[in-house]
Amino acid sequence: MRSHYYLGWFNDFFPENLVRVLCEDITDRKSVVMISSNPDFFEENGTAERSWLDQAGIMFNEYHLINYHVQKEDAQTLIQNASVIFLLGGDTLKQNAFLKEYELLDEVKKSSAVVMGASAGAINMSAKWLCSKNFGYEVETSFVYDGIGLDNFSVLSHFDLENNITLVKDELSPLSEKINIYASNKDCAVRVKGDKIDILGNVFLISHSKIQKLDETL
Image (tube, rainbow, N blue to C red; front, side, top):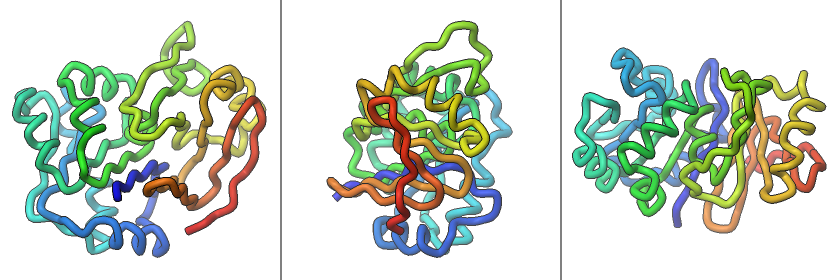
C-alpha cells in the first residue's frame, strides 16, 4: 500500500510519532532519490532533509539528487528504481517547471515508492496549488498550477498560517470550492496511506470556503 508524506519544515528533527510510521512504511531502503527545487543551483543538495532521515535512523544504500547535472533519461530511470522519492523544499515554481521539463510528473505518480515532500515539495505533490503574491510568490496575478496529483487535494505547506488565517481562507476559498486543501506550517505532516489520512501537528482543512483545525491522529 503506497504512502505519501506531505511535510512542512522541521527546524530540528522528525518527532518520534512521525519516525515510527516512516519506519513502518519505508521497508525497502535500496535508494532515496531527492528532486531539487532549485535545479540549476548545484549547491542545493538536500542536506537538511537528509539529516531528518539520518537522525530517524532511516539509511539507504544509495543516495541520488536530481537536478540539471542529471540527464532527463537518467532522472526518469532513477525515479523508476527508487525506494523513496523526496521532493525537496525551496522554490515551488522552479521545482514545478523542472518536473514538467524532465517529464517526471507521471514517473513519480506511477511509482510504487514512498513519496515525501517538504514545503515546496509537498505543494508540488498535490493535485493543484495556488500561486499568489500573498503567499510570497513574485507574481502579479494569481494562478492555479497542476502538481503531481498523488492525491486529489491541494496543499499549502510551511506558511505562517496561525497569523494569517483570514488571508489564507479568503485566498483559498475559490479553489476550496473545487478541491479540499490541507494547510499547515512548520513541524507538521499529512500522511496518506491507502484511504486513510493521518495528521501530525497544526493542520487545517479548507473545504467549500470553510476552515477547520484537524485533530492529530499520529
